[in-house]
Length: 271
Length: 273
Ligand SMILES: Nc1ncnc2c1ncn2[C@@H]1O[C@H](COP(=O)(O)OP(=O)(O)OP(=O)(O)O)[C@@H](O)[C@H]1O
Ligand SMILES: [Mg+2]
Image (tube, rainbow over all chains, first blue to last red; front, side):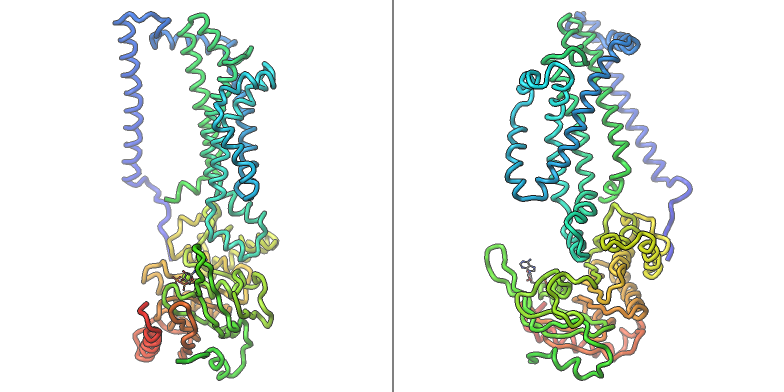
């Protein structure tokens, strides 16, 4: 029996797909350009003062200045450390606690109410307390980032572990597999796509956590810079930091996706 | 109506092959979610000889899967005994392979890794495991597909892979629960031929569950015909046609007679299936 192997030359369908992808990106870029022109034009025509809404050209100039000046990079590095450390903590605890909750009825009954309670508390309201407990430095921001990122991660871990297909577990039972083997060979790999989805939300959330933490009180970081520039009514400067933040978020998301891709490639092929 | 046909069927033959598996008055009653007792299998007695290809044929919902689960030891009978190799089965057996209606492959593993799974679970050394997996891939006609992912295979090929996986630990007993039920008619016919070849080549005892009369008649040495739920054994039909059997056999009068007998037997079980 022979099966068609991958075609050597691109199939017409694939060429069409490539063309469609180019067209889609074209639309995205075009929309952006139009938006910028409208913004720039509006600000110029209506003479909007820069402390209300700066023109995109001014923001771009300011952003380039910030990029070339070393001081902003230092603050970006601090925020990055807070985000990654907080994210790592919740990624690890989300996996551990989520596994225990998903696999043990009693643990679920005991632990899950606290997880839910934690989620219903507005964590922004916890920030002042965290500063009292964990100090003015980066520790309190790491805790904040971890707290906010925890919920989407643990929920996905639990859902993923519980969704393990019954027949796969039955098959493992027929092989007399131990619960640990069933966990490692069925539940864990099947859960990974859920975990990655949780992590993708988690990393964005931990950025929010770190910035919020810095708003409440910090000596360094991008969030602190926003507060400072806002105090100086430097709105253009605030926008420049916002660009830093969104680029940072996009970069982290892309890195995460790239690292995770080989582990969950199989799941994208199923329906 | 035959009350206990199981007892006399094997007794008539020359006892060349020993009994591998025996059901001794086995019943299974489920407790449904609303607390009702659902009798699924009622006092089934029959035996399976070593090397035999035996089918369980019966209408949908009559308890065929239940019977198979009890044969594996994954499910304890409510009453009666399942005897495997002379000993009562009190826990999950360790000498059987199982094939489900769907392939149940692990999509994150390559085909080869799927076939190595049983060896992995049982601690077979890696070298031996992959050697065995390659032999099995060859045996089921998937020689060049070991490194593919399951989703790259057609339904029939996936089921071949799952048969290979079931054979990984060289079990004495192969349990197959409607393994070709999800396949199209043409693929199904081809898989039947393949399975016949495998069973002749390996001499593994096979318990094959199906609700296709023709499939059962084509493949089996004997067919256990079950009634509607709560199911009993209606009769055990011996198919006296030498093997290997050709696909043309299906058009023959001899085969047609068997099929008619079986159909009449199933119709006689009362309610339509
Ligand atoms: N876990 C369970 N709890 C309650 N009732 C069950 C359970 N499993 C099966 N049953 C019932 O037992 C009966 C037999 O089920 P079983 O799956 O063994 O039938 P089957 O012959 O394999 O059917 P099919 O040909 O459709 O696969 C059915 O009526 C079913 O509703
Ligand atoms: Mg069934």
